[in-house]
Image 1: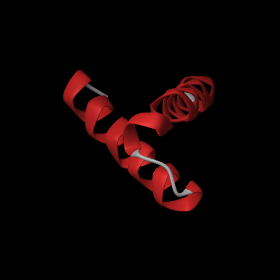
Image 2: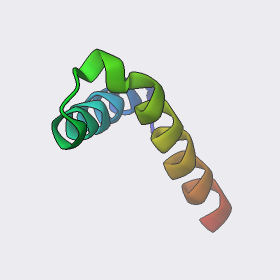
Image 3: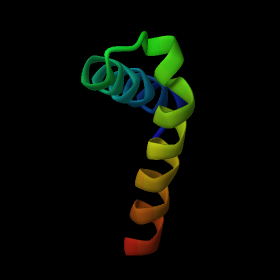
Length: 47
C-alpha cells in the first residue's frame, strides 16, 4: 500500500472513530494511527 492509500485509509478510520465517539476527526487521529498500524501488521503477518 502506498503513502496516498495509507493517508486515505487513516482519514477514513479517523472519521469513523470520530462519528462513533462524538469527537472531531483530529481528536481521533491518535487512535486511528494505532488502528492503521494493527491493520498493516496483520497484512504483513499474513504474507
